[in-house]
Length: 258
Image 1: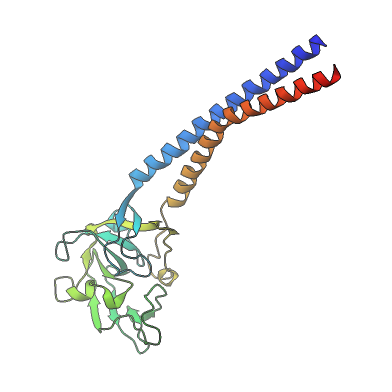
Image 2: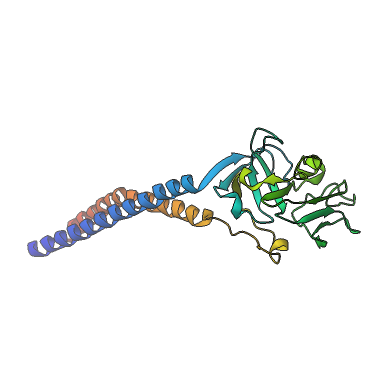
């Protein structure tokens, strides 16, 4: 009987050491994923607070967004960009790119749609406006040709947006230099709303649409890391409680046999 007890203790100690090793490994891997995810995100993204409702309903005033740090040369039609242009304002602004180098942007056709190089563009992201009121892509008609190295920018809430249409009489017909862009909005993080999707309407045009940055794998890395850290840290207290419970059970059984 004494030999059996020693064997049980040895087996228990072996399981305990293995569990402790695995829990320590889980915490270590979790820390790498969690901290690495935040460091990676800090290198790739910058947070911004949306200043106005000009991009409603896609993003609204007060929301916190993550904008991927990109070069202006990487911007595509349909992107929502953060930019600073001293002719517009001295603070970062957020608008959607609807025209790039050489595009002729006009509004509106017979159905109230924006046209790009003579072809109508369906814009599902536009603010719906007041129910029952016929909506158009712009309450005012305009035509502009985008110079090389520039972007034509509009808000999704066309009635309430101060955008390229306001600057049509300025050099570039309201367009902004690509170099003015500091980021491309990838996700709304507060309130949590997920990745900002690229509109398919521009996908068939030359250059296509951009691809989202690594915001989703970064999120999964941080979440998985947090789970491993908490799971590994919880092993010790849980295992201790289970050992005490098993010990009380074993003593009770021995007393009953006696």
